[in-house]
Image (cartoon, rainbow, N blue to C red):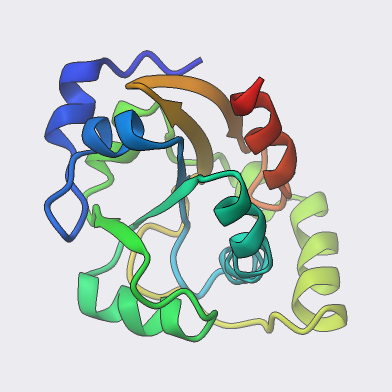
Length: 176
C-alpha cells in the first residue's frame, strides 16, 4: 500500500482548490494517475472511466484524475470522453506521482512485447488509436488509488503501461 500520509493528502489540491483529504472524508475517491494524453492506454482508461461514471455515482465515488499536462489541455482531453468538469490535478513535474510511489517505467514496462500486443488490440482493434507522445514523460507509470477518510483502501499499481485495471473491483474493495 501507498505510504502517503494524511498531511500530504491535505496539501494536494484539485484544480478547484479541494484537498484530497477533504474529498476523501466526504466520499470515497478514485484517484487515477494517467500517462501522457497521446498514450493509447491513457485513452483506453479514459474510455473505461467514462463507461464507469454511472457505477461510480451509484457507489458515491468521487473521481479525481492526475495528469502531466496543464489544466486547459487536460479539460479539452477529458471533454472528448464525456468527462468534462471532473476534478483533476495537474502534476507536470510528477511530484505527486512520486509521493504515491509511481515511478518511471523501465524500457520493458513501456515498450515490451506485452505493450506492443496490447497496443495493437487497444489502439487498432478497439479503436483508441495510435499517436505520438504528447505533453508529459513517456516513461511515467500510471496507477489508481482508492481513498477513504484519508487512507488508501485499495490500489492498482501497473507493472506495465499495458495493464488494464478492474475499476469495479477497486470500488468493491474500498466499500468492503
